[in-house]
Image (cartoon, rainbow, N blue to C red):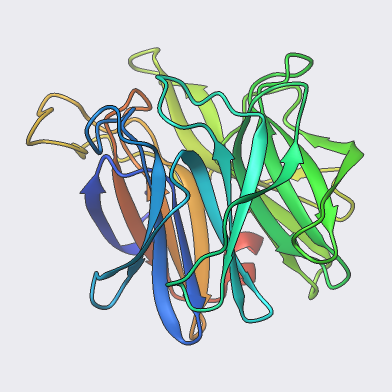
Length: 295
């Protein structure tokens, strides 16, 4: 972590998966993915997500049994959650995204399919609104591209989605763990993603989080440096794995409140041993993103 940018760095929840922080009707909450694959629960129980109130750490909902890569998006007074329908079968092999919706974070609609992809499996998703339409980014291991290439859907109601054929990102390099934001102030979509690189000392693969931006989802400008990188002195799960040190800072999600940014991300070793972490930046999110682009 670059401590000239980030402060109040905190690690928590060993072996809980991808996280979405969001606010709903004035309440700050987090959605956590939970899976038996990484040892967060007993084998044989279905993957799912829990929604937790940040102030009290109280669990508000347990949703989407049999799904993973679950992501939350708030609009029009509702919380929309999307997840890949996988279950627990030793893999995360899914070709369909399901959706559930709530007005209160307690009661949820029955999951309904909103997108099927016949060319490969589906993984993480992210959504942004550009003032006219919602854009959903999804990861795929479509064999026509390098895993986990990003493709895009659009919708006017968050329920009915259409695949955009031309916009593709990461088809020539490793990417993953996306977040997606749009800012009308400068007209850019910003995507953050997991970047794979060789550690100069160990020659092993390590993972940081980089950033790119685009005005049309087709032509992309790369950021000048990583936005997050591993803390090589940190042990993500010392009680059970005292010899494992962090080589990964991935799956970042950013939330702005009162003019400050908090990022939630996954540490660990990208091999099933992980923890969650968060850090703060004392300015708005667009100002943070501008730090990584030349002016």
